[in-house]
Image 1 (cartoon, one colour):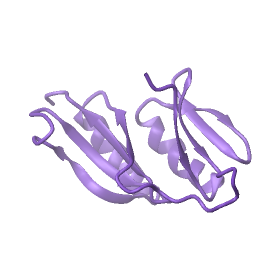
Image 2 (cartoon, rainbow, N blue to C red):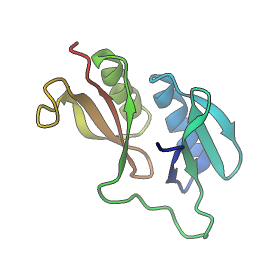
Image 3 (spheres, rainbow, N blue to C red):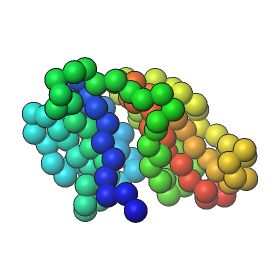
Length: 125
């Protein structure tokens, strides 16, 4: 079981302006914030963004992404639209991914720092 996942960011304010509305679509809310980090969850922190403590610039990992569960396909669509409207870059539009599962419906977005996030549901509609 994973306790939490963190991405690096070069700009906490920009990350918060992106993630506050995008993760709200999925029912996650801001649970803490300071000048070096922000965390989101639905109780316990499950996802955070941090300014790297080593002072080096944050960079996204190649092939690394975080997938957030969505209630249904409409929620996946809304997540994608909100993320793109907030400065995210489309990295795979909402749609079925039958190579994973017949009902796997997901959308991929790069956040303003280049990190890949996804919303996914297995709901039939």
